[in-house]
Image (cartoon, rainbow, N blue to C red):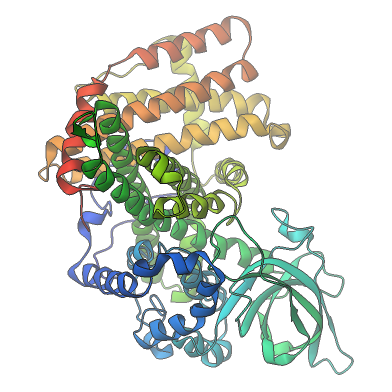
Length: 593
C-alpha cells in the first residue's frame, strides 16, 4: 500500500474512550493531496456525464443493462483498480485515497453499487487473501472489467448469522475439484458476473471457506432480477450452484478461514460505505439548498425561513461529522499498516491486520453515517414539500435508494452489538485498559469529584461524558458480562453512547486542526455537534442506568447524568443561523473537496 501522505504513529482501536487524543496526525478532507483532488474530480466528471445526467435510467432495469459496458469504460480509464498494485494494472493508493475515491464514485445512484462491488467486495477477498497465482490469474481482469465480479455470502437461511450457511463443496474422487452445491441470495452484480467469491463449507466442516468460482465452470443458474424498493438499476439476483466443479487451487486463503475473510472484507465495506453515504448526503443537501433558494412562499424564498435554515444547518452539521469520522479511520488504518510494514510484516498481511484492527470503528462509522444520511435525505425531501414526493424529482429516488444502507454490510443493529462485543474482547485480552479506566471512573463518580471544568465547552463535556460512560461500563462489566449477549437493548444504547463520543471527538479535533480556516463556521458546527451528541448520550445513558444500578447508586448516577446534561448550554438558534448563512452562500455543503 503506497502512502500519498506522511504517516504517524498509530493509535489503538477504542482509545477514543480513554481520551488524550490531539489533532496531530489526524487525517481530514482538508488534507487531501493535489493528486487525490484530481482523482476525485476526474471520476466526478465521468459520473456527471455518464450517470448523474441520466439518473432516471438508473432507477430501472435499463440501468442494469448499461452496467457492464459502463464498468468496462471505467476500466479503460483506470478507475477500477484504486488500491490495486500496478503489477496487476491498478493504481496503488493508500486506504485514505480509496475512501476519497469512493465518496464520489459509490454515490452514483444504483450504479454506485455496481462500482462498489467491482472495486471493493468483489476484489478485496482476492487482494487481501489471494496467493500470487490467483492474483496473476484474476486481478488484471477485474481491474479492466473484462471479468465482472460479485460477493456471495448471504443465503435464504443465513443472513446476519452467515456461518450457518448450507452451501457446500465436496472433494471429488480424484481430489482435483470441489463439487459445489447451494444457493445464495441478494447478490449484487450477479446478473452479469463472470467471477463469484463464494463462501461455503467444505465437506463436514463447521466453518466457512471461500472459493473463487468462474461462471464458465458450468452449473451456475441465476434467479430473476429482484423487484426492489430502490437501487433498481443494480443487478440483484439469487445464484444457484448445482454440481459446480471448482479446482482445488481456487480455494482462497486457508480452509475453514472463510468467515474471517468475510468479516475483514465486510470491515472494508463498512468504512467505504461510511464515505459512500457522505457523498449521497452531500448531493441530497445540495438539492435541498438549491430548491430552498429558488422556491418562494409568502413573498420570500424558503431559505429565508428560520425553520428551513435549521434543517439546512442540521444537514451541514451531520455531513461535517460524517467526513471527520470516516477519514479519521482511513488515516488510522494507513498509519497502522505503515507501522506494521516498518516492523517487517508482509504488505498484504499488514493491510489485512490494519483493517481488522479498526473493525469496531468501521462498524460505528457505518451506523453513524448511514443514519445521518437517512436523516439528511428525509429532511431534503421535506424541504421540497409535495414536489419531493413526486417521482419527477431526484430526491424521491434518493429517498428510496438510501433505505438499504442500514440493512446491508450487516444491519445497523448487528453492527451496534458487534462494536460492543469487539470492544470488550480487546479489553479482556489486555489490548485496551478499558476495564481499569472504567473502574477509576466509577470511583470518581462515587467520590463526587468527577466533573472536569474548562474554558472549552465541547472539550469539557467530552471529558465528563466519557467519565460517566466508563463508570457505567464498569457496572455493565461487573454485573452483566456473562449474559451480555442477551442484553441487546442495553448493548444498542451503549453503542450509541460510544458512537457519539467518537463523533464529537472527531469533530472537535477536526476544528482544532483547521482552526485558521473559517473558524466561526467550524466553531458553530462543533457546537451543533455537541448539542446533537449530548441529546443521544443523555437518552442512551438514561436507558442503561436503571438496568445496571438500584437504590442510592442509581440515584447517584442519575444525578450525575443531570449534572452532565446541565453543564454548558449552547445558543442553538443563532448557531443554526450562522451555519445556514454559509449553506446559502454555497448553495449546499459549505466545504469543498
